[in-house]
Image (cartoon, rainbow, N blue to C red; front, side, top):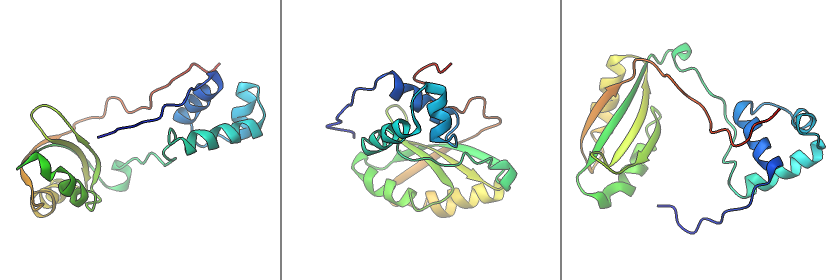
Length: 160
């Protein structure tokens, strides 16, 4: 659970920098500065401030798993035996590389996770030998994705 979050005030330049990075994280400070009519040094200072405030959590490559041979994307609804087991289950799930996203949720499932696998045999192995072997997971429901319709970052400000 998130508590005691210190929110920082973002001005228009901060919001536009975040929007540019959400669209193209490889853009240089100089290019961002030109778009926003500020110096590269200003962009650098702003990004450093946003990173220290943990608004920018990191910058990473958006991989095409299918091109890497991972043809199955599945979502798992995970039922826990007891809700207090969440932390230990989360720790164990974090050790499974195929689990690429997981959320503690309300509703039917305690955890909703996204996994990527090479094929259905690999999916079966991950489910039966890794995930369902975790102490505290009562059962899972699997939903195989047929197509990713939307995958994007939230854009905070329009950049001309």
